[in-house]
Length: 288
Image (tube, rainbow, N blue to C red):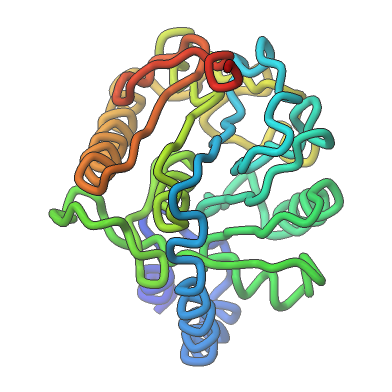
């Protein structure tokens, strides 16, 4: 019985670490929860084309960002991700949107997530927040992000099974992601941005065997099961390359969608390994 319940509530490769009684309760409430998520998805339709013809910056958390003057992003449309509110100069440029994909529970417990979300809420300004629907009940139950617009994406499909080159419709279930910048790219394209610039999207930990950030983590420090407390990778090359292959296929799919819809994506990350998008130095966006 327990195994069957756990199978039902498995989301992709993520298993929510709840006991059998809690799983039963969640199954009994599934219709209500689904209705709430459906309502949230329907509300995402009002975002379609909201920023048509504009540009935006997607700011990742890679250490390459340390060499950039992020204060130059003031007045720009910026999408930050995960712990991005810890960037230096964050208070100066204040992103417009902030997003976080599905959470892998394990070292990160529901109690940790509550503390993380409270930290996030205290640092963010008026940003709209995008979360995975897997965290919707936790947010509702503990009244998290009070007064903030929180939107949800149902991350359940696979890019490998998606053949359409239409812009991904975030008012419907969308492909799950291997890394949060992919989620941010889907959101940016749906919002209508036709020029999207990536910053701090390094993806080069397979070269250095370490995973570092542009800042010091707070609540989330030591909660990533794929690295040690010092940021050294814990899994071997085989598993790392499997994940990277999925990630690069997702970026290739995003690139193809962008080209088919007249959207230009640039990688202005200093260094890094991502090679699916045209490179352009960060400073060129502020010249002339």
